[in-house]
Length: 69
Image (tube, rainbow, N blue to C red):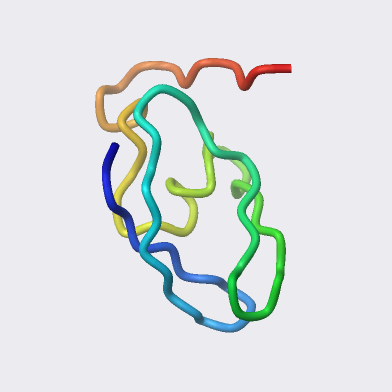
């Protein structure tokens, strides 16, 4: 797992979180304002949209696995 800093677009709060390397994270709740972040259009996860690093699936130029049902 990798450490990534996520920045909330609503309140600009930055938090360091552990990014899993085996799945995408499609929901993240800001620790300050409680806004629930979702990936921007075209991104597979919240780390790609709001993190200082892209997820490994994008970095490796392969498709992100489907989230579990």
